[in-house]
Length: 220
Length: 291
Image 1 (cartoon, chains in turn red, green):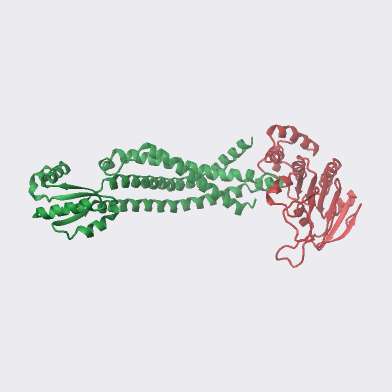
Image 2 (image 1 turned 90 degrees about the vertical axis):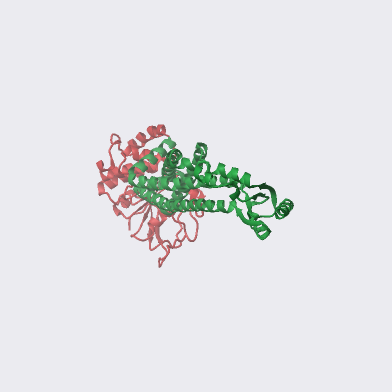
């Protein structure tokens, strides 16, 4: 597929073709502006390609109507570099919010939220506010929020970009654990340490083209 | 749960931006009050037109020295005129009696006038009151006719004034409504901005569009409905004040506004308020949230 943003001199993604199997763990690496984040945006149905197709969970979402987007997004979890937590809500409330706004009852939230917070290693810190948590802990809350719905796919856009190396590794262990439950994990990063340690599939993008696709790759 | 969530969000939203909420409600109230007032006036003018035009008469006054032949000729002509539904001859004594009745509050005036001084006349009811002009052209040069007076001409003046007032209030109401709607749009923008993080998360996790928009739209609608209630209170207060005071003397002239008419206008202003605010809020969100 190809994506050219208006006013851009060259395509952000140029004739890129990637197939990711269910349950895989894939890194997209490459320098800034190489088009990695555009892939995430396409998988989220935030932007559409100019040419080619995007198929997610067996459904062609290239020309999906925007009113179907909410239902589609419920099958995808998302984690970002900047956590995107609500500052006036506790860890528990942040995760529960994601459930409640898609129509789940408070009773469901009471059952599954402590469970998922336990899973990400935040047992006992449910009632802390984001500013009372460390960066790593905040990212754990974000992961819990992304995973609480048991999505088929977890997208992570530089999830360790704001974290120190030790904390980053803890977050990666967590993503690995989530991947082992059968969730496909797609992670965009330029953290070479992490890629080298994980030894998972690496797709390298440069100037909108795939220059490498290795099954158990390392960074550069 | 979802209903409770939405309602809580609405109340929190209105309270968070309470100065704008008050401004929104005040402009809404004034606009809707004027709309209601103009609606009532419209009804009244309609009622009064029915009532007055039903009884309106064209009077053909005869010269004091009119001859008997002229009078009989005119009477015959009127009886056979297809435009005239009914014609009544009023002689000097009859005219004097009517005069006494009309000015019973002013005995001096009644005493000063003798039956002889009042002209004889024919009182006509027209098939269609608007054809007055034809009657006037036809009879103005007939022998013995002094003057032709059309009461509907007088009524038209009154109604023109009332219609003018009605159009003016409607105009002010629309101008106020425009101000109110700009405030609604602004309030929605501020609300959407203050909840941008929540909205971003909701979009990300796949909350439905109506669920994201509903609190904002309802916020505007609730403010609009509060404005409608205040406007109703304004109309009620207006009737109480005017009904008991200075307007009482006009009771006979202007048909009084009943309570039921005031309360029936409420669904109109409440409907206009909620519909218009909802549409404004929704359109603002389309531009501002891009959901």
